[in-house]
Amino acid sequence: MQTKKLMIEEIADTDRPDLLQIIRQLPLSRSVPLMMQYYLSATMQEIADYHKISKQAVDRKNKNTLNRIKIIMQK
Image 1 (tube, one colour):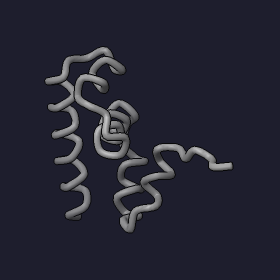
Image 2 (tube, one colour; image 1 turned 60 degrees about the vertical axis):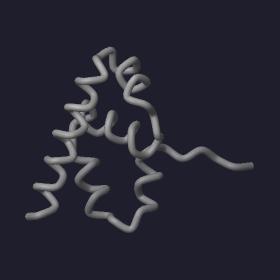
Image 3 (spheres, one colour; image 1 turned 90 degrees about the vertical axis):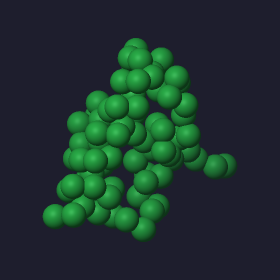
């Protein structure tokens, strides 16, 4: 029997434990849309519908979150 993994466990399989720690420290309002897009391959519309925000808001939020992660990783 195959068990489902949680989103955060899927990320733990990557070779970037530092990235995992950064994502875990983000507020859920930032990490969930990002993980939905990149790890679950959800469309912008699916993410927007789930969070009850516009597709543009999802795109802006994910871009800002990625920039935040890049800055943290450069430290």
